[in-house]
Length: 244
Image (cartoon, rainbow, N blue to C red):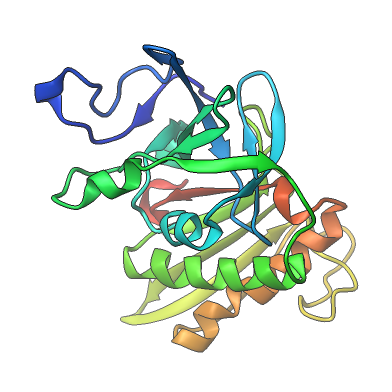
């Protein structure tokens, strides 16, 4: 996975970076910001992946951070095939996470306010239920801007499988909500059972708020079969027309 390109809108008049420049650590005085990938906010906790390590953190304002992630608002790192992952900037000395905007706008400076991080404590509530709700909300947002999301294992060099895809597809003028999982989940009670030699499985239904939000249920039931935690997941975004 590429580590060296990120897309973020910054003000060129103050000498800061604009989209497409190298995602290297930035030093400003005593501040050292390192680009990190981020898991969804689940139970008040996130996982970050830097080039050298991965860590779990509790976030001082998980609702505010969660309202930014997965909404097409946050700076992104470019992957092959016109896919992207969201990236933030971590200062391990001050334990703060800076979220920069993807696009410049009059109110985009609000994204730059750093979130305070502490060593992860016990999650609030049921983590899997929270992930289900988070992915449902992100599915609504992605469908509204014509993007898919792909739930994969996190990290800069993560494998392509397992994965779980959500998208909407226009077929004969009708929009369908589509979910795909690779490998095909077994024994979930949610996904249909398929022959053992079939590598993946997909389901679809006419797109509506209910069927789009059901992406959370399908994704979590697949992810639970991967033998991971909710914080091991990273989301990849893109447009289906570019994803071949």
